[in-house]
Image 1 (cartoon, protein in one colour):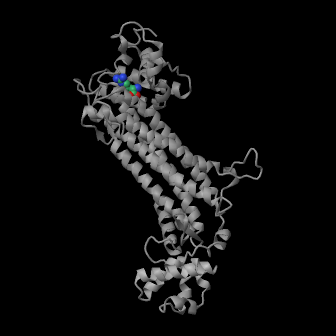
Image 2: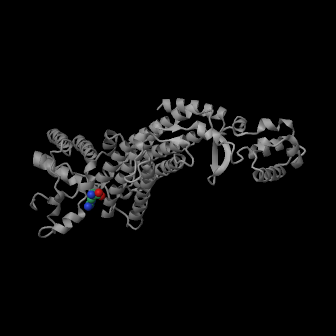
Image 3: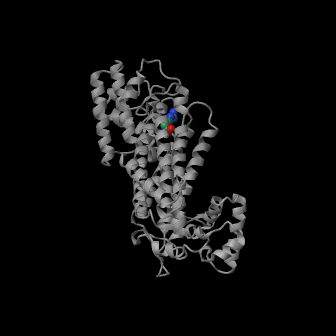
Length: 462
Ligand code: ARG
């Protein structure tokens, strides 16, 4: 490429150093923005024609040239030359080759600084919709599985120690709640980023009479940004998007961690379908949950992208700086990782089976009914702190004698508290206790059924 072709380098003497060309290029990464660059350019050209800054004929040439370039890129026929630095220059240069004078007018009143800010926003708006759809699919898979287990009791854990009885549905729906907040966070992120930077130029706007509302309208933005300096230097939305991805990854990682444990021989609560297990190159008996471990492991990349993006932003002086170019590898990486993890989690959940027999067989261990017994005593007028102490002593005694609370005879109970009566047996045993939860949002069968109905309706509307 000669100097004459790269008008933006006429200011500089000699040829650029090859080393420098490789170092500054972002084309290898930002080429995935090409569709957005093209629709953004078409909107800009349309506006230039409306403002009589280019002719109708020039607009026509620019539009059909850009559409052709889009087709060439989509079909793999486009020649990406790193000398063009980025996707913006690569497309513009190709347009000039196709249209000559008309193509040279496209960049009127525009800078790559407002152009890239526009492209990234358009890309992100679309990606958010796709991630939201994938979140919804995973929620639906969880709700479907929950629907099969609204009566089946399992232990809930705190500190990974047996805590209280819950139904399996309630456990599963706890993830539907987390994912719902992820969905809403993405919606908020999209609403905040959805303003058009076009017309902000390099940093100060333009002396040309650009119609910013026109480009904003054409591109489906809800409005325009109101400060040109902010518009070219704001990447808050990138950090926010990655943060939202990081929280999705966190939630998936916690689900994965649970199921890695739950699919072990020690728990054997859940069976991951063979299609999503791997084996060992040495130990022939193995069924390993590598997929879940990778979901957990990949979370690290997303956190890395978040830290990288925040760090890229923190020291920049006001206005656009080339540091900003480094944002893209991180938004793309976070998006790729979370997209793949959502797909994988959805597949695993859709094909998983809970081993209800095995779970039920172990429910007598761990005194899951102890808290309910203390609440029974509260019902008999015993202050909770006293009730807590009474049940604590009972449990310690039972543990020594390898007995369950329900196995004690009434006289044994009454040695600890005269308030315990014959009706105590209706309040013991994991399944019995789960059926007695009355508080809204509890983890019992009645509440779980209500929640399954709620989610089916709510998600059905999406
Ligand atoms: N490739 C650049 C980026 O991603 C585009 C803007 C470059 N602007 C400039 N004045 N060098 O941020």
